[in-house]
Length: 183
Image (cartoon, rainbow, N blue to C red; front, side, top):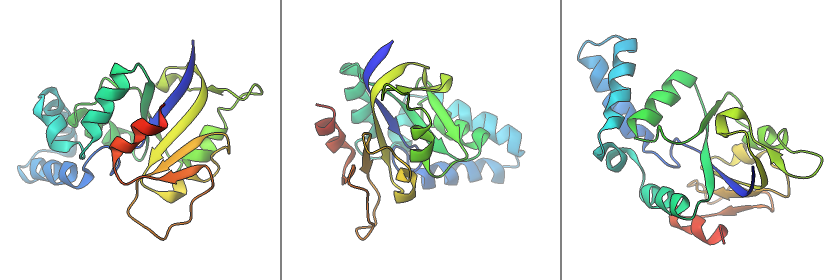
């Protein structure tokens, strides 16, 4: 299946309030749970509808609803330790999204490796395995865009106003702005 665009959303500090997630996880550990027990209990918090409201940053839930309503293919591309990233994603109520956890901080280089001779992108199985004509990466770290193909689109939602961005990466101040780039 060929999608016109696939949107890759970073998780930590882009979609989710990582500090709140970490604080709530630490509270489980303070109650005497082992790391493994705490991970399991933490993941179950995502089964409660309110977890999306508690852990997602302003505009994230609205963005995800918009993408779903418009049938725009999207998923999470996040950096970190796989079990911790998965636990946070579950806790945030986002288990229904395709997720790729990477150990590469330069996500642009990873994305470039998916590019085919035709110019389209063959997504990995974790993100559905489909082919996309265009990729959009949304991230809060400038280094995530290193190696991003010039034909791909990047949206930087970080807080550093001094950061130098490649020509194909635009600065946004709120997740709602992503809708403008989907048209």
